[in-house]
Length: 312
Length: 249
Image 1 (cartoon, rainbow over the protein chains, first blue to last red):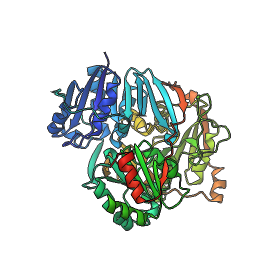
Image 2 (image 1 turned 180 degrees about the vertical axis):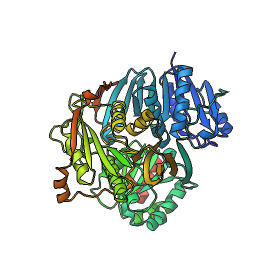
Image 3 (image 1 turned 90 degrees about the vertical axis):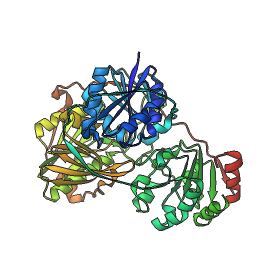
Image 4 (image 1 turned 60 degrees about the horizontal axis):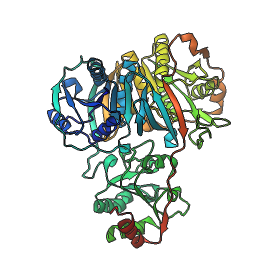
């Protein structure tokens, strides 16, 4: 029977919600799913992991060298776990966490990895975007361990109605190759960009960072939306890079995506074109964003957006 | 310290890619090719380390067909000292590339390898991490800042929630993100000079490694086209559509 190991993404306190989507992807492989929680002082995460539906067991590895989640340390643990547990698949989200970690695991296992899977047809048969989402590749792998990163927005989140057993596993030896010196995380009361139901995104049409905030924040407040931006707006310094939506930023697929003052470069479209409903507000009638928007409003955003905010 | 920078020849990022009608691949006939943009950033970073007096030599390496020598010349023109070409007409998968690079590292003994974080053709984002794993070296992926400090380097990484700073023991592998630097343009005199810089070429087969493909590409297809919608006249109509038709607010 198929046995899959899903690597939980977390910050030692909270299980990241993308893990629920990765478990859904793992379900498509069939068989049994175990969830690995490796961290320091992360018993609370293991409890949350135990409540994830469709998970058989939670493996908890608690050690100081897992606190910073460095790939050098985690990869050794995952390789040992796979070899001892007889797992035939290892799945992680195609977040910066997963992208950093899984190739290291695949190389140590001497197997090819399939990155950013958006569809699982069967064990060993996957669809993934290449060329910035301009081509969909169907790829087959006969590797003894299938190492995949999966795009969370391409899968549903499983329920949290499970009651898996939590099993402590021994930590692997520490490598000490790297040390985490610190993190600067953007603080926000808004929903997380990658998992928000509504995203309000701004482009260079907003002019500068002050206007970006003045125009878009009230609308995002009213809609309970996450704020995003085009690469042009990030490069122009309106907002930090973690706002960026697109091939070189975050891939989002909310229920409603409002593109304000965004022309719609291919690399931006690659990051948001799976959104359920797309609204574009732009004064340029020829902006490419209008070709994919469900509702386009050709208007001056500095008039239209405050009006929209007021009427909602 | 010596810095090694692997570079890949890919379809130019401005080219709109087309899938062959039989789904067997991407049409590369008469298509403009260029150095992978993330690798260009990696080369620039290495050259800046040399200009700052930290790096002593910058060696670039590319694996691919004969034409890959063009991107090596590009890298030499912006300041790399020497180039290695491993010739292969077959496309190598990231694991095979990492195995070849491990061999180059054994020969060249660099203290730092700077890769692009991903190639913009297959978008795998694997090679740097795999190389680090095979070497048993630490990795600093998606780097936006690299600061050498004695026998270690500080790497600031772009992560989903913001930024993270790691200290890596040297030797190490770093992969470049977009904001690491803005690559310079090569001047004409430097392009001329690059033609005289050393470039060694040998077939990948001479390395004696298992580089056979592990994956089978079954089909290439264009993405499902999204249907364009309608234009609304004003804000009131937009709100009505979102409430009554799309039912998303």
